[in-house]
Amino acid sequence: SQASLKAMAMRNGSQQAQSPQAGYRPHGNDNSQYQPEQIQPPTTQHNPFGSAQTTSASSAANSSQYPQRRPAYLLHRDLVIGRGSYGQVCIASRGEAEGGKTGKRKKFACKCVMLRSDPKYIAKLQEEVNVLRELRGHENIIRLYDVFCVDNELFIITELGRGGDLFHLLTTHPKHGVTEAYAAKTVAQMLSAVAFLHSRSICHRDLKLENWVLESGKDVWSPLKLIDFGLSTHFTPGKRLSRVVGSSYYVAPEVLKKSYSEACDLWSLGVIVYMLLSGAPPFYGRTDEAIKASIVNGEYTFPHELFRDVSDEAMAFVSTLLSYNTEYRYTAEQALTHSWLAANLEPDQLQRAKDGARGAHIRSESMQNMQM
Image (tube, rainbow, N blue to C red):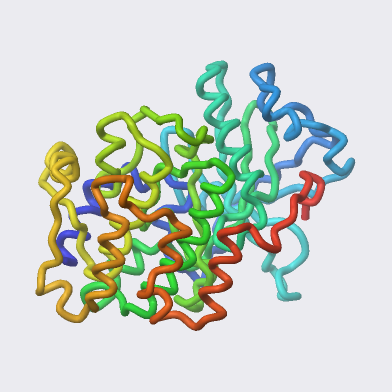
């Protein structure tokens, strides 16, 4: 399974790099070796998207929602944690020394994008920012702190997941997969975040191991955070989506057939759970075309050599998500009621995930409250 995971890493290398923090490894020393660049948000926030601003995003550019004086960020362009066609994601810092320690400031992830006069490109960026703003407050979704434009370069400042992503955790794990207890705890947080997304009529469309990062680099049991909303979209219940997006291995068969709903996210989660438990993907091939053909075929197995230590309940749980027929595929909220999770989680942990799925304790916050 380690060989298949390494093959995935090589085949999907370019895709993984496009995630804001995908491939970001746990680190203890992320201090820049070069002088950081100071970026100063405008004193009075102007429209960060220029003339392409739409009504739906107008609140994001309302200058009255921003404080008059905003501290500058220190951008460490040499500390790159993600690259893609849009630009790159670097580490930024700001504020007083972290924990009172000399030389350590609070760190963020900063997505740097050069704006261009392409309405579709601008609309895509707007959608990503709007989604991040709508989802603020859920403990398993990366937090948006700031968004502004300086000299035609857009800066999207988010929380920094310092513990690395789950793909890295799995590829460095000495055995096939992780324990069921760890998988269940992880999956409950994923389901909580996805249920919350769907309750806000948002479909992520690119759920994969690389897009889940650990909050802390010191504890693998630290909270999980969902990142990279570049392919996410708002949906209308009952209306089918058709744009083929997503990553090899994880994409749902109905997406490849160009007619799908938010249920595609649950298929992707099924692939993730399968991989967490076994260390290998359920659908594979030597080329992207072969992988997609395997997915469209929809047949998968639980090889004994990979699942010999995995319970029947865990495999049954995976099957509720990897249901080819979306009518029988569990929703995120339904999956949170499965007996496998109840058997592997403390009652308060499971209840916390269910509360998060419903958006309990999450209050609407203005852009002014986004500022540090």
